[in-house]
Image 1 (cartoon, rainbow, N blue to C red):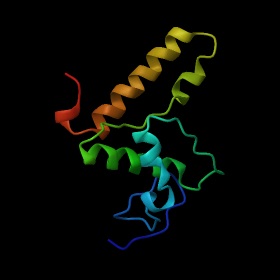
Image 2 (cartoon, one colour; image 1 turned 45 degrees about the horizontal axis):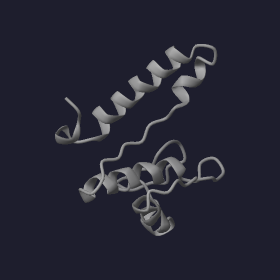
Image 3 (tube, rainbow, N blue to C red; image 1 turned 30 degrees about the vertical axis):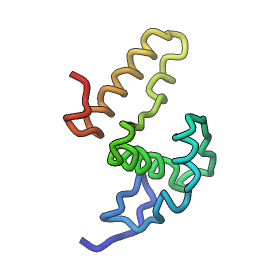
Image 4 (cartoon, rainbow, N blue to C red; image 1 turned 135 degrees about the vertical axis):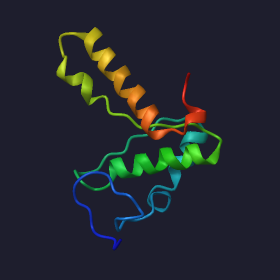
Length: 108
């Protein structure tokens, strides 16, 4: 399949043209190793989600970490019901783990 420029949603390096995440954000691994927090702040559609998905995959593949990316936006639709928001976020987390992690790293 020929690669193409994706402008809608996360990119996949095997089918989309994209810059390598580790080269664009080299300091992230150091921050993670030091257990520091960091913020990725950039305009819409500049690769934030793709960068975080790729970072999670690279961290997991290293064998040093198990990482999964999830969105907490699912809880935003329940602003007056924290319990329901929490359940929605936990369900999102379960789905992300099931979809993104190899079976050997998934909880029972």
